[in-house]
Length: 219
Image 1 (cartoon, one colour):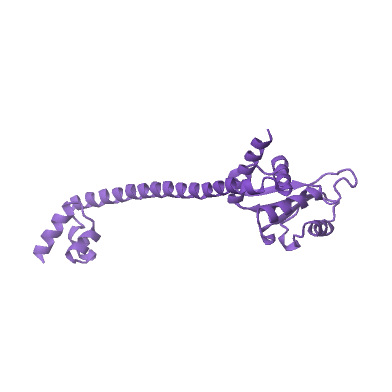
Image 2 (cartoon, one colour):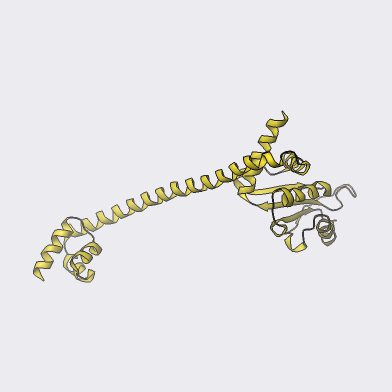
């Protein structure tokens, strides 16, 4: 045992952790703790090991962050490349052109939020954009959500039924209605304002590319 202890001391002075020494010599960590607990030099080594471990952990976290950032950038780039390829096939489709123009003028342009969103009170715009999402972007109906902005004098159930009938989006895909205080001219907003949206960063990447390509073709 004395021979093993001498080996353990030498390994400890080489700044090995209890776990490393235990694996190398087959000595329980509890025994090592007993041997070194009153040794000030071992305590200093323990503190150094802890500090080194924290530094290594920070390095690993930084490396993982870099890898993760690169992975997501590659993922987004794949969608952008798809958009370029698909554009040539759909650029002359009236529904595609209408959908992009609607989004260009009325849609959410903040790329980072990953939400493709358009709001309007004109049901015709909402219908066209819904058709664009489903027929051009191939978004399944069940992935498309709606929320309404209403005034206090709007009938929520009536408004939901109106927008559901126009879009074909069932009521269970309507999110919480927002009601704003104030009056509005009678019948100007009889059915409120409809926001139609789908959460998809990939699709938003595509729409941004398509918008730029369409602009270049039209300018």
